[in-house]
Length: 130
Image (cartoon, rainbow, N blue to C red):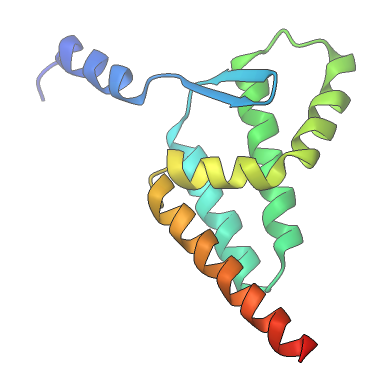
């Protein structure tokens, strides 16, 4: 086996890059790892099998927390609770962003699905009122 071309390795690292994830005034610069995508998939699958959004929310929150800590290892212990609270408040946005970042969907497809869901909910609500 030949030695790996370092130019090729740097191309992959460059392709992965650093995710700049911003919600409100908070931006985290996160370097994704292979296992992050697998953990996200596992969380989605388990939540779907058990028909539980809570499982998805908690597992994705843990994943995001660990990704942030991996990128900011010197984060003071006191900020961990604040980070967890912030993640909990923003979990829906984090999940949507993960779906796009991990290439499970595109922003356009996600907007289309949300629009369709809203239309269906409105139609259902108007039928209940009548």
